[in-house]
Image 1 (cartoon, rainbow, N blue to C red):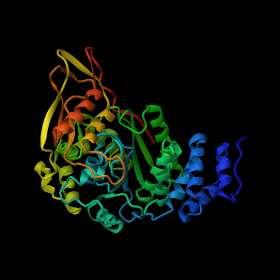
Image 2: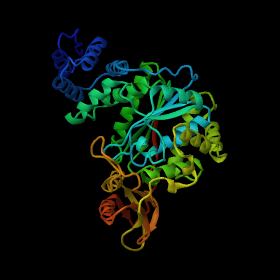
Image 3: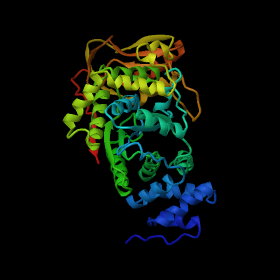
Image 4: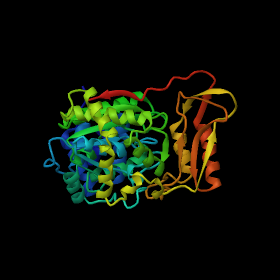
Amino acid sequence: MVAVTTKPVRMIDLILAKRTGAHHTKSDIGFLVDGIMDGSIPDYQLAAWLMAVCWQGMTLEETAWLTDAMRHSGQILDLSAIGPVIGDKHSTGGVGDKTTLVFVPLLAAAGIPMAKLSGRGLGHTGGTIDKLEAIPGFQVDISIEQFIKQVKEIGMAIGGQTAELAPADGKIYALRDVTGTVESIPLICASVMSKKLAAGANFIILDVKCGRGAFMETEEKAIELAQAMAEVGRILKRPVTAVVTDMEQPLGRAVGHTVEVIEAIETLKGNGPDDLTELCLELGSLALVHAGKAKDNSEARTKLQDLISSGKALSTFATLIKAQGGDDKVLTDYSLMPTAKHTKPFVVPGTGKKWLEHLDGKKVAEACKLMGAGRTKKGDPVNLAVGVVLQIKTGDETSGGATAAIVHYDTEEQFEAASKKLVEAFTFSDKFVAKPKLIKASIS
């Protein structure tokens, strides 16, 4: 039987207990989070505890207690007056993931209020907030009061994450990032769920990515994380549905900022790439069935497709843009957004018929980062205009000399740097290659 720690007198008690694999009590976790918030627990002791968790793990109950304590470390939004179901979507991050830009107006058009707080990009993954700033005038830094008011008035809002929600997570994450403890599933779970629960939604849809372009590189680890978050939601009495999706290659064809906004708009017009459209319909169907707006997945899909084909989803996005100070003319005039000075094709090497065997999403993202589209550290500026638009995806047939991608760049040095990285991203075969499955698992 595993030992359970007694009421801690000092932080060292928790460190030693977790180092030996003991389980914490709810009061232990409360002591920990209180100490983080009032500064009585120094960083070096918190770092030691994080490493012990990274090695020994936490039970689902411990993870739920940590999630709940972190949620209550700051402001908690009360959205209950808006309606019986308030939705929120979270992605664990990926390359070309502009799903929120499609999903939020699509679900709002279907009558499900969407309260979405999003982040900026860091490393090789892109941030929703950065993408939205490609729309002239769009205000992402809105107050909590304005955020709630907007969801009440128009049924949706997308704002930047605020330090007022789950501030304990911010303090913990700052140390995780520099102590090699980011990959701990209990810590990831508590970090994501504490912010989602504090943001006030009562139905959360999680898109857990797996593959080279994702934080969780293996399907097994992604499923483990999805199951943990769904179970923590159950323990804390908040419905959570999670899907595990492929991020070996980028989602959609556009990777960048302006180019991704354009692709999201085209998807709302019914012209989007198959994989992005499929993901939005799958996530949206789960939400509609949960909210009682469709009896099954088939009916839900039909309703969502009708919202796209009728133009209602696109007009709802226009409403969101105008509500947050943006220029909705971008929906018909893409030149209003930051645009790269040049475009040039990156071509398939060699001659003869080929199939794209593998497309490394992380390498594509790194190509964009070399042109200035990504950040190395928080606060770095980004070039919203540059990017890569893929012309082929894994399993597509092509031929030597054909265009594999179109590079949007400002200088020849940027193009050369991106091209060298793209050479590493594309792997071709002379034999037929099957297209990969997008949705790996669904968990609730």
